[in-house]
Length: 237
Image 1 (cartoon, rainbow, N blue to C red):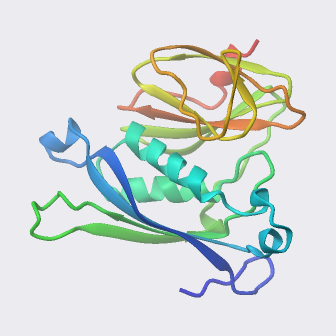
Image 2: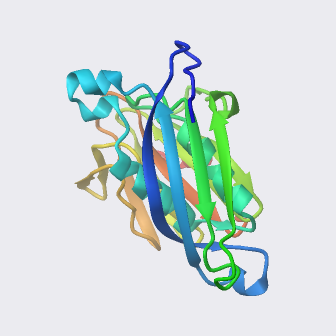
């Protein structure tokens, strides 16, 4: 597929992840609502890779290792009725950049396959294409933490929580909430962690940003538990 940049009008480059295997609770039938099943993803990210090619600097392109962890995390900890919902959630996540320096993904092509759904008779799948026109508008607020809902259906909520420089976020991780660091250099419970770190469940965590720039984490809530933008900000110390 040839995709043109909405910024320059030139053809975009593509970074592809093929056959990413993930376990997810997904489906409308009773047995599908209680047990994870295998999904396979093909994801194509459209962006300008020239800045990375000319500099050799990873931060000027997409870290596909981190993207694979993020997509796996979102699907593993979410609950979806439809493949359509899962695909849309991943697309909106990828098209909404975090707060730290990050190249802009201008379009995504996502295919999700559900190989076990028909018992080997066939392999149902969905494929969607989304570009920057589908990206939610980032709403900046003058508070220490910003919670921005990227996608929400009754059975799952996906958020990006931004922690301002010098701030600490205290959160209780119960059975319905999972967190993953999205930026490098967070201090979690007095330990420095890398991007793509899943935070320990069923306990309180202290997430500190000692950097001079905002950092972000991904929050996934499943089974319809209510969460609202700004809720995390009330827990800052």
